[in-house]
Image: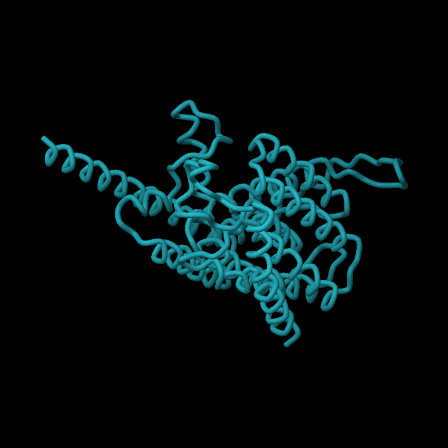
Length: 360
């Protein structure tokens, strides 16, 4: 019952705070105007406010203080989230270098790890676990601490990856907050099985529902035609928090990979494509899955619904699949995605050929 109450409180706060955010974003020029700030990946028209990360963050912050006993790890999560949203707001005002944002992500991920979050082991899909806490280095700076080298390194890599991977999947109206809300709910449901940090199973579940409520409270204003965009703060925060939720309960990294299969595969394909074309992996371009779907005639609404539906189906699968079954499911989705992308490319080539013939 408390999880649902926290969900609705976060939903209501995000909904209410988004209204003045739209006005303030316009007033302080936190907007995207294609005539002044060209971005090759943008699909919108006209002037659209950004700064969507601000109301989402404050909804999470307030609801967390109301419903969850705040300890060291939660303080680290909220502080790191604040810094990420702050960087996003600066980016919303004047685009920050993608390379600078990337190193900012590494610092923010390292910060939350310093507060006690980590991955001491991950589940082996073939059975058992893979321990990551075997190499430990004691540190006497500002008190006695222990660095779990492999565990902390993997956590930083994972959080930096999810921050960017999920952020890339916010190209069309309503796309991101919908699938983020769905994913957070399933991670909350799965968190009841076990947890491994200095935070209770109940707190992890409630925090998951708070994250879901905040993003779904923002969704009505981001639906087509969007009145406000998540911005880098909203997109990066989404990936960061989903990455955190996946490791608050040890072994849920594989579950997150399954539920987030579409944005994960899209991000991996994008990096490989940019390497192949000898372009910087940090430089945005028109080539994500949602861009390809637009090219073959999908509406923005249908693209958003597609992401939501796939997240919902994979979330349901995650409740029942275990170990090797999750790996098989992910590989199946990856294969289908690859086939889907190839088909889209062929449809695009046929369309270009027909246009060429018609113009001759």
